[in-house]
Length: 103
Image 1 (cartoon, rainbow, N blue to C red):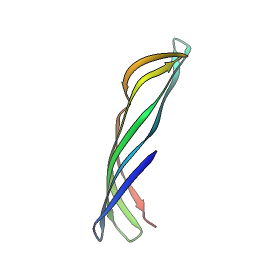
Image 2 (cartoon, rainbow, N blue to C red):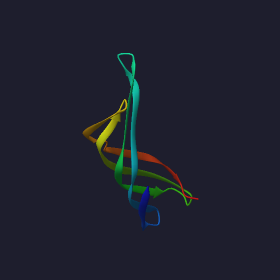
Image 3 (cartoon, rainbow, N blue to C red):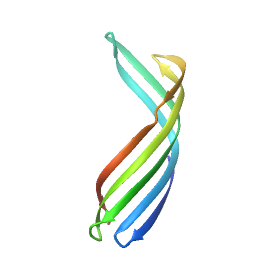
């Protein structure tokens, strides 16, 4: 994926990061349906947008939170060898909280 990130230092101990990314997304599911193998595959172009906020505890260590949305829509899938037209959203929202090591 190709991405662009912008980091803004708000104060000596705070920073915020914004990013946008776009790239190739693959969808795959395998399973059993009434004891028979079931496979679906698809691929499309997707976009991700996100923001993270970090509070620096020390010069090398911070804590932060972030949110990201990944947007993609499948127009067709291959299911057990047959190509099927669909209108299937594989959009999701990710929320994160974590520790950041800065050096």
